[in-house]
Amino acid sequence: MAQISTGNGGLVVVNLRSPGGFTAQVYTHGAHLTSWKTPSGEEQLFLSSQAVFSPPTAIRGGVPLCWPQFSDMGPCSAQHGFARNSEFRVVDAAAPDAVTMELAGTGTAPDFPHPFILRCRVTVGDGWLDQELTAINPEGASAPLRFTAALHTYFRLTHGVAGAAVRGLAGCAYLDNLQARRECTEGNEDVGFEVGEVDRIYCGAPDELAVVDGPRLLRISKSEFPDAVVWNPYIEKAAKMKDFGDDEWRDMVCVEVAAAGSGAVEVAPGAHWAGRQRLTLE
Ligand code: BG6
Image 1 (cartoon, rainbow, N blue to C red):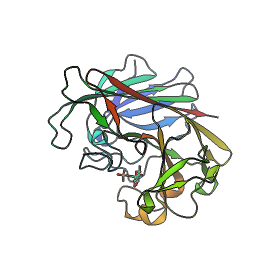
Image 2: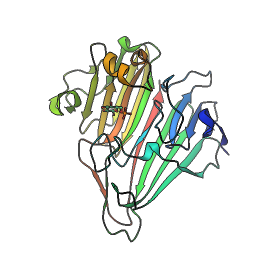
Image 3: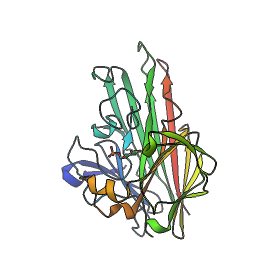
Image 4: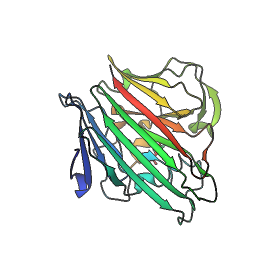
């Protein structure tokens, strides 16, 4: 059984442990994964020192769930949708290494009038972490469930941003958020972050990507998420974000497996969609 305890801000957090001693923490607020550590205690995810643990504010760092909308790509008024601001219910914590949380909608939200069930399962293994996001359109619903989504993962850089890169995107088309989503093509095998903000939606991105952190390599394997978003706020944007330290852009990079630039996912009544990522430490 996973251990449930009181976390930051008095919020409910589920503590996971793999057979070999890797750990993870998932808050019921947003079904938000905030920590993933090796048995020796080395944190793999970035969590801002300024993060606010006070619902409905989303937690800055870890893995916010962007659903039913990535960015402004959908009908919701809130950037990245409402899942990251919502309280989830623990539906399965029977094993020590996994938890499933669920959010159900009745179709009464003014800017998202569709019934749905959103499920997130996190499993921690020896050297890997799995996250699965499932969206269900209930039987009897009157319309398809349409959404965009992302697992907005903040990776912690232990060797600083100068030695960091995202690998595996060469040749991939991307929408540059800093140029009104102009379509560009990635020319580099390693996308780096030293010279300015990077904010790109890679469309039809390869399923195998990696974060280079100095001599360390962290692999990302995705399925059913067609896209990948790469973001680092750099100096000016970091200074504008209230829940993010001015210098913390040096310690993180976001690589977000997403269904965004390639168009919305559509799920028929009675059907479901599931997207996954596996993070593996080399
Ligand atoms: C990224 C977007 O996914 O999230 C960026 O591409 C955005 O444009 C970033 O700045 C953080 O968003 P938020 O809403 O958590 O501040």
